[in-house]
Amino acid sequence: MIPYLDFATFTIAGMQFHTFGLLVALGVIAGHAVVVKRAKSLGLGPPQQIDLFVLCVFAGGFFFGHLFDVLAYHPMVAVRDPLELVKIHHGLSSFGGVAGAFIGGLSYIHVKKVDPWVYTDLCTYAFPVGWLFGRAGCAVAHDHKGHLTTSWLAVRFPDGARYDLGLIEFALTPLLLALVVVVSRRTARPGMISGALAVAYALLRFPLDFMRATDLGPEGDVRHLGLTPAQWACFVLLSVGLWALQTSRTREPYAAPTKA
Image (cartoon, rainbow, N blue to C red; front, side):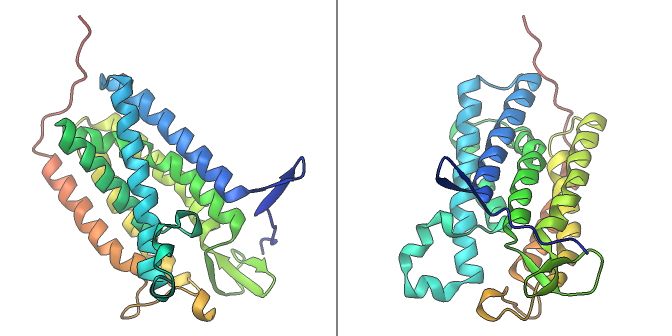
């Protein structure tokens, strides 16, 4: 089994830092760098507008990621303390973050009147890079406990051997990264990258949530008709992904503008 290592915090010069926060910050930086580089290769811009687009995406992702986490997984916390809804540092939901990023990106697209699918693919292309850092943060924080198991994939938690869903998804994320690279090289039809990633992540995430812990009481994930909120969201994501793949087949390939 995998040993339990506690890297949740570290100290430098007497100051304590949270590893999860550091890795998320690095994910933001890396994701932004990938977006900027790809936008330049596609002839999108100017750079200041790309930066604003990234800001809208991340702002929406963090805000709605926390909002979904509270309302879907810990609703009674919000009832006791409504201010919890804006305490972003208290927890994030992956699907809430994806939905929020989508809302933030669409807001920018609507205001700036840019091609929605080209910009959506731009964001989707960089998504696995930022996700890799984010899931690395989940892995070191051990904040996605699975159920007790004797599997060799288990982590030896202090309360028994369990799956660590953050660690497992971190290990699988390079597959998503490879997928967007392959799709981007095989086709230039707007929407193909987003559709492929949406379908792949839904199919990857749905079975993983069956490994989530059910014996942690209030700390465990809630279930609705036997499924987690994320699993219900997988149905939506899969439907959107299939629709994006189907409709993208009718679009003309995007050609970067040539320089005069």
